Image (cartoon, rainbow over all chains, first blue to last red; front, side, top):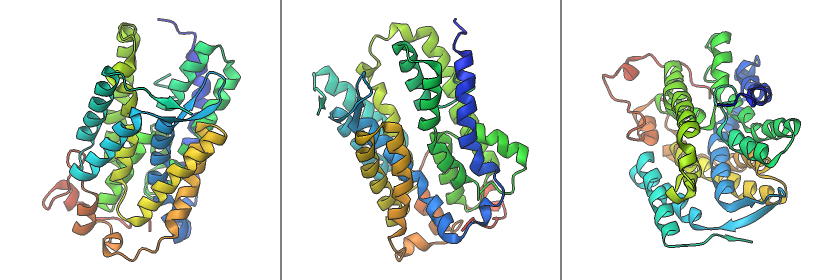
Length: 114
Length: 224
């Protein structure tokens, strides 16, 4: 097993940890006004859905350019969303998403990159 | 990398960049950009963990991933008080250990899987993110913030990059959510009450019941 990327991993830690720690360790953040705390409570849904949407709708090519993508991933993630809302069970939602992706790819449903 | 960086999306990207021959400084810069969203998570968690000693908060910060954040913040909001041990359980047992074991399995066995997409594994990450987001939604504010974050994130990602799209979506979405008045009663149920617990309940993730240890714990002052 190669260890040549350990240095890169340490550098990645050095740039990742501050963003995780600043909010938790900075003094006085708990004394923010109520509107700021209300804002922070909405950060989670916004970031998580942005991650999901970008993961399935935006494709990045080898040159680093981004393109709009339409594919079975939309249906898979949408099914997961529907199942979680309906059954309140994330495991079932993930299973549904994987099943849809596997079946669609087995029968050759393509993704369209615009 | 899974131990030190412990950042799934950044690791996937970094491996791709290494294979493509991108220089280390460029990879580190892209990692910083991709993980900038953790600043938002950290700030959102801070009011809940204000009573935790500094060294434990410093250690908790290293484990603050997308999944750990979503599990913890949903758990805290269901209970109405910051369950620190719940955070450690979610971050270490549910995330850190499985992530590193799976990384090891991938190193040892991954070469035998020619196309992971064939097994639908690539949709697990976005599906998990959207599923975890649902667990944080209790009313129209969260829904508007989530929808706006997604739309703005995709638009910005198409114009710039995915990493920037995530951060901008995460910043703009909550502003849109705050424009929604919280009139509905289900949005104003006090945290820690049965109504609040029912609102956030997700079988298989956590249950709050009368007589449980959680219910017996005296609630602390919620952050807002």
